[in-house]
Length: 421
Image (cartoon, rainbow, N blue to C red; front, side, top):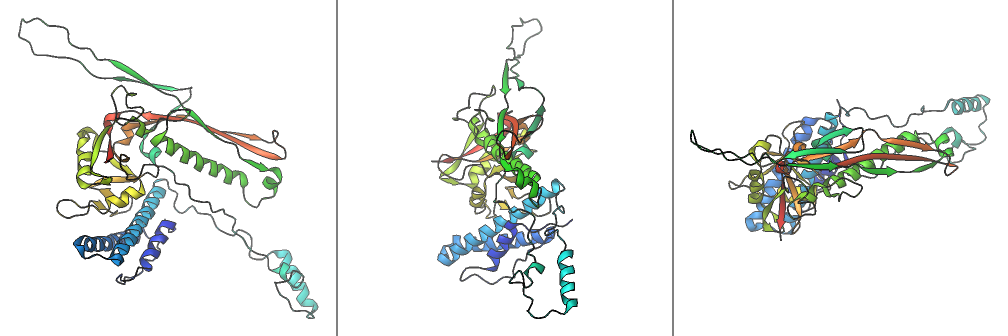
């Protein structure tokens, strides 16, 4: 299967191909569709980054070295983003499905016929040019791209890692128990006093409704050279996914899911769950992430949840972590070493979540844990599309709705890293 180099990969290639003044010349990182070559380029770029950053830390740095570090850091991030994109497409069997560009025949038969007739008559009184329609411009129609390139909308991957339940009713409830069964040691004939009994709690996951109601004129639907309805449906899907991702992280629960960050200690929903809030670990430095803080975050999670635990943070936070080392001088961020594998922090998989807060005082800039056990998404079955050509003639409205809810299922399965003030 082939993979078209992404914008992130091309950006990384350009960054390394156009280094700042004083940067040692390196072979250009060419755009490639070979996963092994992409990984090799990433590892080579990360080696460059480590060398430049070590030079900066040695105290010999100047403006040129600092610029070099930032440029290579950006290139490493772009390479990793390209590999993550490739992995996601492999996971959904989407690689290789790109459509062709320019689907009309190279020449219109009617124009070719007219041109041949003109040449057979021997009429050479005027030169044939494409600049003027009457002189030949009709014979050289402009080919145009029948795909549409859209502005980037970053979509959260939380849905791919959380637990998803599909329902056919108005809501979903889950029961919880604290498992507080008491016990004690007694002698053979000693009195057996009553022990404590488990208590129960219940959470209601009520789906909120998200909608879109775009309008297209009937003429545009009839005459457009592309499938406008299909394109618009894809755009609505992407927008819904973007809105969901924001809500899964920070939603206030009003007609939308409860976001995970609202359940951390001290947040609005800290007391909502019967088992308490998501525990917070301090980063260890004012307005910064530290290696010790990340180590504390990992080991604060119960061992039962470590098997499927991952880091969740945004791209800017990853850039901060990429510069950190452990006690032996090894960089704690490591790139992908094989196709299908994510980057890691201290050996733990890393997931980029664009809606997570950046590193700043008092911000929750990283989550760590088993998202599949930590967060629950409730989907009301189906996306409804009402094609409405009557309300606003001559426009056709595509009224699209989806009902989705969400909230923390098990706060013990997740930990949050809070940046110190």
